[in-house]
Image 1 (cartoon, rainbow, N blue to C red):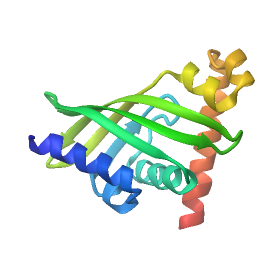
Image 2 (tube, helix red, strand yellow; image 1 turned 90 degrees about the horizontal axis):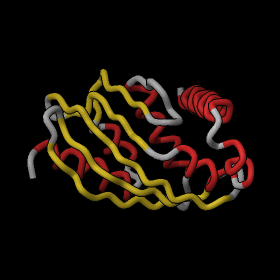
Image 3 (spheres, rainbow, N blue to C red; image 1 turned 180 degrees about the vertical axis):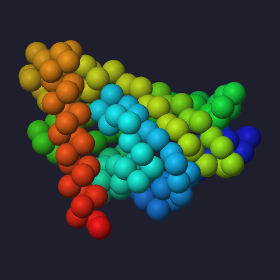
Length: 156
């Protein structure tokens, strides 16, 4: 494995162990993160997001595969199984991640997953009916952003 692949392997192994500090240590001080729910997070927000998701995801299980070196860093695929706390629904989220890496640290992470599939699982009938709409995506994003701000405020 290359150094970049080793970094991403360490990141996901830390995720599996719910080792928040080790995950956070994989990021550079100027890192960014984006996915269909959490948009344009800075480094502090990214690190807090993982802490929030791990501490709230009591039954979360993660598996990863296909870590590959890329021109700017690495890519990987991963799956997360968990109970969505707002509804009690079980979710399997399949994610493709790409990472920009500089000096042995993640400087940008872009996670892609099917938002409609996630919404159907997490929200049930509401997700089935509205999961494809920009309205629901905006609502989920604003709720997630607010929850992250509240979480960060509670830790400061």
